[in-house]
Length: 402
Image 1 (cartoon, rainbow, N blue to C red):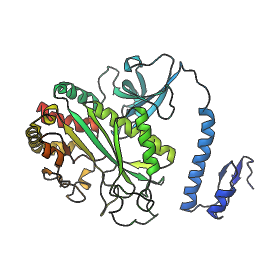
Image 2: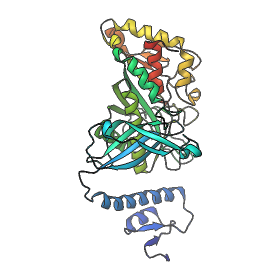
Image 3: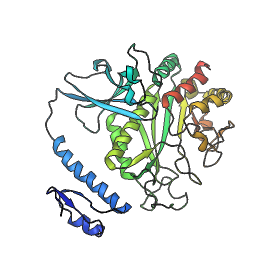
Image 4: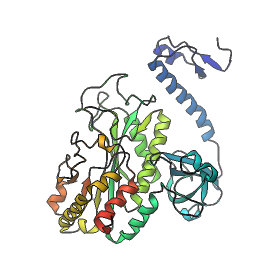
């Protein structure tokens, strides 16, 4: 018997069916060493109980004159996302209505302890799919006290590049691949503990419990992104089980990076609610399994007009000359993915072709048929920084910058 009257101690040696059917609506814990399956049951039960309690408070009335603004920024690793909430008591119609805020950069790896204050400047607003109502998500730039970008602020240079190229109307469509993992961070979602599923083949764009794992999570992210105002254009299950993709775009210029970063934040929050992890690793499982990329589709106004194929080829040839510079900017750990296998080209050579998913750059069949359109750069890794990748492409193809 538990010494704590509000806590039920449950014997995890009991059958799971009995546990799930006989649980009272109480917090519970275990005095025994749990098996992995029982631990998973425990974590999910706790998640459900916590959500039920949480929902009681989320129905409390809050004045419509109050807006909760979730400030979101890129952390010190250049891949992590951080956030904190500010209460605002005036109408918010644009980023100009939002105050500059700050955070402790020494706790995120973005400033030393003796001069730790980093400023948050709002740059883009999205609806908040978690709090809903008038509440908002705010994407922010990270600045020094003198209002210049901190070292890992890649948006500032991307904004400069996109401003310089805006007459060419660069469009981007980014295919974000990612892998879901169990809460242990080791087992891909849907994989047997300590083992492997059947070989690749039935999972890509699959249907059915035997081949698709995590659709509820993916659909929740899809809906949340649409609600927020993310220009998300589709989703699909990927080649490796537990791996998924969503597409953002077409977006113009800097908007592409803003929407992709906020879509990643929303995915992290959704996975937090479901009690699973998301990995951006470009090769999360070694061996005969596909890696994860962030294929970047690109066009300019001239490429989309009649005769645009010549402009497409011209841009690709420019990128060929800057292959090493692009590879260096296209994500960490990409050498584990770009091997020439599993629908990738070798990172050591540059190639392009029509409908060729084993090339560095793919020209879609429809672009060849119509003589205009766009091309797909297949080299970026799933953990790439969209500000860096999109600006690198524009620097090479439009601005002719090093």
